[in-house]
Amino acid sequence: MKDHDYLALDGHSMHVFLTVLEQGSIASAANKLGITKTVIGQCLTKLRSVFQDPLFVRTGGQEIVATARAENLGERMRVVLSEMQQLTATPVFKPQQAVLHFTVGTNHFLRDIVLPEWYRQVATEVKEFSLHTITAEVPSLALLRTGKADVLLSPVAPEGVDILYKRLFIDQSRCFFDGNVRETPRTLADFRQARYIGLHLPEGQRAGSITAPILRELEQQVAVRVPNVWDMASFMRGSDLLAIAPSMLRIEALAEFSAIIPPFNLPPVQLFMLWHTRHQSDSAHQWLRSQLETAVAHVMQRAKSVKT
Image (spheres, rainbow, N blue to C red):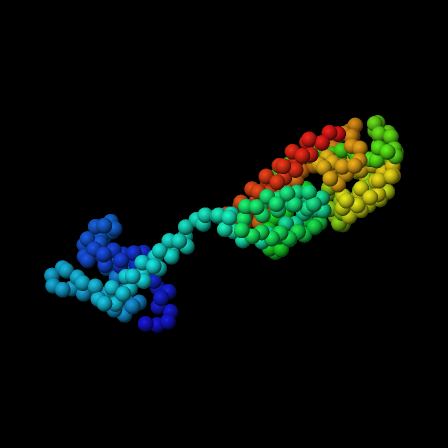
């Protein structure tokens, strides 16, 4: 038998062989399988060539008997077919037995307010869980395509057929300010005369992220730019600066500041969960995504309970 002959083996032929072995008759095997004796003969011919053994020999008339090699092969083929069946079965994900390692690309605020809750939620359900984060205000899709991240949390819906996504929430913007230092801005004129603090976004992302005309106008009044929302609090504290930001920042990052609904329309703030198509059907990945949805829902519920 040549080293590569085993590649000619197939599950169907082995199943036919085992049926003939169990039935002790080609006719009985054909009847049980619902196929012709010709098909059975073709399968046995293939196996005889692979194993260089007749496998079954006639004892007289139409009766056949398995060779010693065939008897030995029968036990081993049952094991192989059982393993092939398990190989094609849909895996059942059992969190309590799982060892998971996950990387999430997200901005600083979501990293600090959503991911801790998600981590605690997942860690109590699985055997072992490790989490790594990659922070950027708008995480790059390349993180998913290169496998450097398993999921992204982004305010921007993706482009590309290989990236899947689900919207996790819609939030509204608020105007934040230090009420101990300045009066509440109430009119459009108040907002046009104010100074602002904003986030520093990478080249090319700022223009795409500002769609409302009023925001493009107020963008010209930004006096300070910082890399993340936690730094915004440091500059706003004790100053007259205003910040136009998602209302969910009232939970932690800007919890100490006054917040009002601006007297002009602003586009909704959205959060999307993004993942690559190669992970779409993975049961562990599906479970982790569902847990992330739950964690975000809990955070949003907390945000709604905070009075403006």
